[in-house]
Every structure is written in C-alpha cells, then in structure tokens.
Image 1: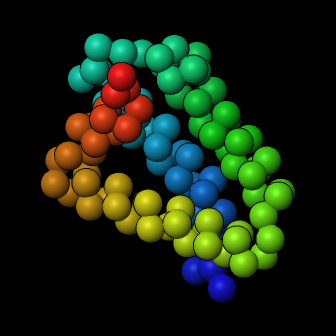
Image 2: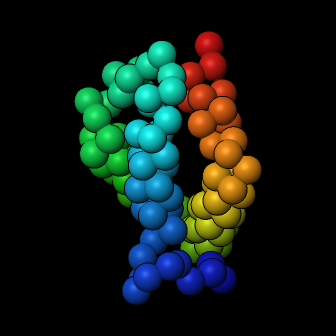
Length: 100
C-alpha cells in the first residue's frame, strides 16, 4: 500500500510536480535556458502540465501500479531533498532536463 502523502490526502506525485516546478524555477537563473526550453510559458504552466500529465497516467493505472507510482514519487521527493542538502539539485536537474 502507498505511503501516506504529506498533508491531508495530498497526492505525492502532485506534490512532486510543485516541488520540481519550484526547483526548476530556482535553477533557471543559473542556466542558459528558460521555461520555453521545458515546453512551458512559466513555472505555473509547467506545474499544471506536470499535474495534468500525472492525472492522465494515474487514470490508467491498476491499484498495485498506482501504489508503486505513488511510492516512486515519494522516493523522488526524498532524493531531491538529499540533492538539495548537498547543493547538487541544479546540476542534476540540468542534466535531466537540458542534456542534448
């Protein structure tokens, strides 16, 4: 069964979308890139797109698959927290989102 999300009934994958949007926005100042490079007009648009994409995927998952996906989102949030503690978030996100 999926671990409970932070907050009252909050979906950890939706929370991850918000966290990623915030972190990407913070990193943009260090990168030779902008939101258009991530197919968005800004942070809010990116978060909305992320959440909408997750909603579409979530609708097609079987219960066990959903539990696994929610766990993976929680684990990704934990990994982001660890990267942040080491000051490596922007380097890793740049490699993930802007590697060509």
